[in-house]
Length: 320
Image 1 (cartoon, rainbow, N blue to C red):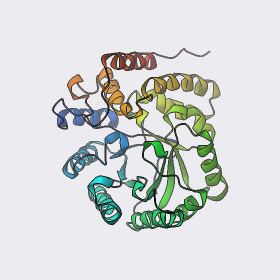
Image 2 (cartoon, one colour):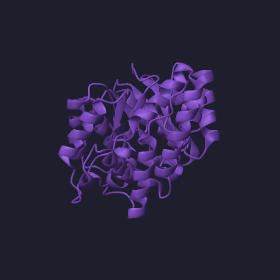
Image 3 (tube, rainbow, N blue to C red):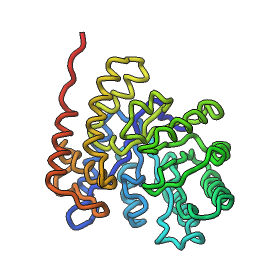
Image 4 (cartoon, one colour):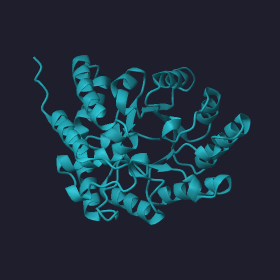
């Protein structure tokens, strides 16, 4: 089983130096920092960690660093990059290899990237292949988290019928939802889980409406925003599950302001912004806060992130 209910699972980025190489010292510093934070686990190789863009040796190095220094749950994103792995023919094999690498490296659970290679197929074939893809991962025997990602970010739209089949697979323990600007999609999937699959874990990946997603029934959070400024976000979840409404409302407003400064267009720039936020906190050095895969952002963007970090880190008012 996966013991993360009620907890925050940051999707962690990889600190790169200016040359585009992983900064091993900064990586170790980040692992040590996160091991002292109030989190239920971390997610490596997710989009925030550029899992599909790293070379295999880089992925293995990153997972080894986390497994050596982080004693809690590690979720590994698994999938394949369509352009690198032979389209329909090589996609499944590459995904299984990544999953097997994750389990050999000590990951506790897998999170399945959306199999985008099937997105343009006729509906019946697409849905059949989506289910078969997840069945192959589930057959590895580890806890498997489904990943519903909106199409504009590289996801696939799963119908409720497909989701019902996926929830019925062995070892599927829950779903991470990242619909971003489709609250209706989140609500529909939350209702499906609540009514038909109540044992499944609904995990929010909704950085831009974190508080509301908890109100809709999410029982854990696996978010890129959790990569930095961890404590207010962990306290937000704690307040919700403790029924502390005033504290929850207060923290929701503050965390939402941080999300509105970091999860903005260009959206793929959020990974760079999270690395900048970690540097602003002093977790990693400034020269390790590079994302070689994302869009170019300017000095004004970085100043905005610094200001958002400073605001979120301000102590909250003491309540009577």
